Every structure is written in structure tokens, then in C-alpha cells.
Image (cartoon, rainbow over all chains, first blue to last red; front, side, top):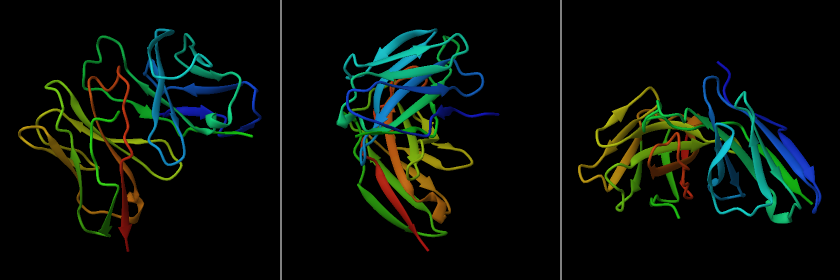
Length: 117
Length: 111
């Protein structure tokens, strides 16, 4: 059973550029959440997608946007990159429909390490 | 802000039980306690979660106090591979709601 996969593994960009990160959820999962983890900090919630719609959003600017496809995979886009966007970007998947109840949880991928120069 | 308090670091001897404490004094009645761990530069790994009762799985045991204001994660026989940052998180519906991570506890298992 394939777990959560993310691509690319590492990425180097320069300030002002745009970046797209990709995530494929665990088999059977329909919800994707994105987190940003700066060095030495815990992951911070960016947003969550369910049924191709953004369901929740954390305290991140509009430069951060996303998309979910019919096969439940997801993309995270960041425009006008800043040095402070350098971080590990984590994708987590879960089963988020009405049948999941309150007992399910999120499973994380290995992350994409983004470096902005 | 995270709603949990954890010690920044702990040591444990290999083969011994590791007991990681977490305070969550403001937990609401319907909030679960989740534990994740993160080995260096990898994605967080789900360990266990619970509401009121103690829980056990193949990885660990979770002991929640009767007033639910604190909990302890127990790794019964720690190995060097258990060296990681352990995060205690409280929240509703872990599948559909954001997880709010604090800074966690760095557990160092010593040979």
C-alpha cells in the first residue's frame, strides 16, 4: 500500500520566482493538507483540500495557493518567493468525508525541501 | 498557538521504557490527544491517539489522566531508532481539522 508521496524531494529557487509542489495521497484517502516547517520549528498548517475545494486555511498570505485534482492529488503553489519561504513543505492525507468520524488522523509524506536564494 | 506543553528534551537508555509527558490543561471535552514523531528531516509519523481511555498499539501506549489535563506516551522498549522529536497535539477530528504542532520533545535514546 503506497503511502503519501511528494515531489520533488529538493528544490532550489531564487527570490521572486514561483514554485509548484506536488502530493499524491495515501490510497483511499480523499483529503490533503499542506504544512510548512521552518528549521527548528513544528509544522505550521497552510490549508486543506477536500472535494477539490479549499476547506480550511491557516495564517498564510495569498501567495500560497493550492489545487486538488479529481484523483485527490494536490499541488501547492507559492508565488513571489521570499527568503523566508525556505522550509520543508509537508503534505498529509486523510479520509475527510462524512463517514470518517472523529477518529481518523492524518498521514504525512516525506516532504519537499525548498531553498530560496 | 499550540495548546500543549512538553519538555524540550529527554534522555532514555536503550531497552528501557521512555515516558514522554504532555500537559493540555485547556483541553475541551470532545478534543482528542494525538501523538506524532518526526525523525530528522522526515515527515511526521502518526503514533497513537485517544479521547478518554488509555490506548495501546504496536508502537506505544497512551495514558490519559482522568481529568484529561495531561497524558503520557510510553515507548515500552526504546531503541536507537526511536530517537526523534515527539509532538503531542490536541484537537477535534484529526482527519478533517488542522493539526497544531508545538515544538515537541526531543527524545534521545542512549546506547
